[in-house]
Length: 265
Image 1 (tube, rainbow, N blue to C red):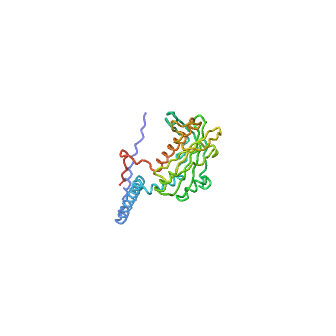
Image 2 (cartoon, rainbow, N blue to C red):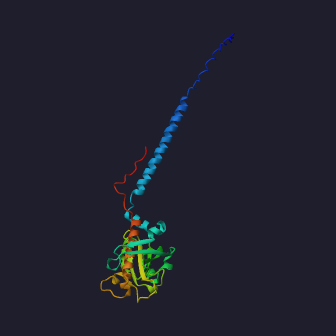
């Protein structure tokens, strides 16, 4: 015999009341709208400020201002930009031989009175002298030593132009003044700086007197220093370090292919 359990009827529960949204007060709606507009304005203003700063940074300085600013490169530029650890000189040696130089010594920046000889100090008295930087390089064979110096001044361009024709043999660093064989200078038109170089034999030999690099680079030049290319060494390093300083003082302007970012609105 089969028994059945009577089905119990389940009464449906009443539907939960639907939440009612409170009516927004007009003043609150207006305040929220103003806050949103203010936030958008601040973001847009920040973007415009960034864009303006970018444009100002990309805009080249007037020539006189750029010239004065270059006088602070001794403290503003990385040392490896001023004195690269390695320099190459394709066809820079006698007979068009390639040259490579390695930096082997670096002096702390110094006061002019401590780093320069008396004749240089007297010559720079009218122009002024801010700071002197120095390094020593050697060639790939380590048979020569070359001092490279930078004398920073507060002088204007005409004063520097008049100065460069009167510069005497520069002091050495990394070897004695008595070992100096050849010397050269470079005065970039973009910066109030005198770049100088002086070369010597690494074995300590003492030439008669330091001579301008151009004298030892002549085809009919005689003597051990000329044959060793010490004039070429001095001239090539002065030109390369001076050219690097020129780029730091007056970096190339952005090309037209580089778009200027527009402000976010």
